[in-house]
Image 1 (cartoon, helix red, strand yellow):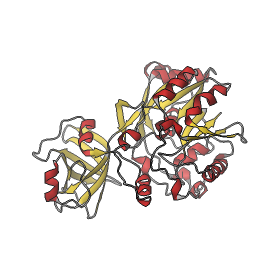
Image 2 (cartoon, one colour):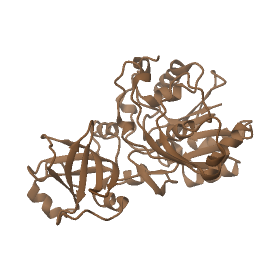
Image 3 (cartoon, helix red, strand yellow):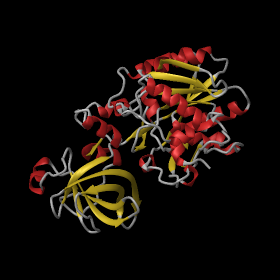
Image 4 (cartoon, one colour):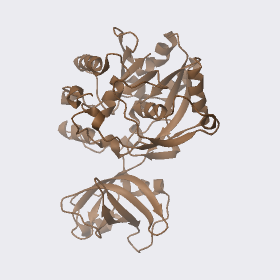
Length: 389
């Protein structure tokens, strides 16, 4: 097994990107190869069509079109007026209770079942109950039960006991904010920048996000590098695009606390793979294309598909839950290449990228140390790495 300590590396605080490259495809690109350990190239993401065009393979690029919800919540406790921050995780519907939300909540005081929280647009922690009344109440959450790391809550309008009937996206548009990762907010504070930026709403969403598949609480960040122009140039180069929708959930924020990465309790994330993408997997099995996944989320969805694909998913597509934990030694079923960002130390994503390389995590961390020496920018708003076959 792989010790989690083997996934550690030192990263200067200044290399945590607090904002994306502008334009998106001007981010730097560190190119390596699974079959050629000595290959190292330094380019820009906008060079991707030429890089793939020089390869002898025909590529099919698979993108995650899941959209990011405005899942960051802020409000006040009805009992004390104290500030509460939170993260929407998922919505449940039951005949008895109606609309329920599972949310992560943080409060200065102890929360208990039966308490209520009034959610308002742009309410800062510490805003008094009296002041918040003048800012336009949007929703009330009634705390039902405490789970391991979240609360099950009932959603109500503040004016009555009636359950809210609006669709999920509309509700979160009214009371939510962009769910930036905590390390970006922390890095902004340390750099003397404002934690909130109005442009995050556009920055933290891929240009190809499908509103019909808006269910993620974090962005599939490798896709943030693409512009419409870059997608057009890739198509002109003969790179086909196929899509999946894997909805990034709370597990993306869960740190690895086990001594060995394989002991980490992996989270489940819902995915939907349409027939056209299933067909591309079949073509890959026949040797007519190579699969380039944009991001670890796309790769995780595809690697959840059995090696031998039954006929029905080819015709109707495949929907399920990805529970797979990919670590060095994994026998890749469908993925040949990967475009990905630089990941956090001690993370399952770092182990996953290391699993692509014959030399494993040790070689990957050599590349990371080189990237650090060359001042590459890290994490969600940072630069990218391309792992070729």
